[in-house]
Amino acid sequence: MGERHECGLPYDPIFDREAVVYDLQPGQMLHWPLNAPHRIENGDCVNVSFATEHFTKELRRRYFVNCANGVLRKQGRAHLSQQTNGLTYWAKLGLAAAHKFSGLRKKTKRIPKVEFAVDPSALNGVRPISGSVLRSGGVPDEPRTAK
Image (tube, rainbow, N blue to C red; front, side, top):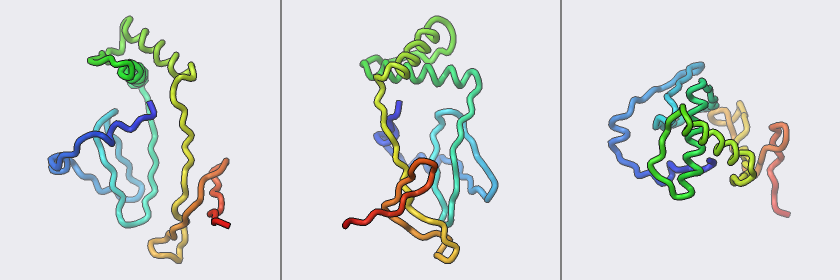
């Protein structure tokens, strides 16, 4: 739905006491179940990571149901089913598709910002830069300065 609900969730220190911590080494990866709570903290070195999504038939169905439920919640509905079969599923699939293709959803354009450049001679191998954004093709613009 393009929203960040986690920003409003209350934090409780017990979350950290109950957490399982994984310190990954170069070349390792980690995955967790759909919608599982998680937090990622980068170490004090260069960190390169990326997220991928992989769908099974059941996960894709859940995705459509969650999308439709998000539309319905915005209309004030509560206690929505997450059933992924039967007539309810097909109705929600139609609602999710209508929402996606109707132009009603809020479209936001993300402008990625580049905050550092790789520099082997700099401390930790990177140097900070400011004011750069990625342009088409993933090439950063030069930092802009006021004239």
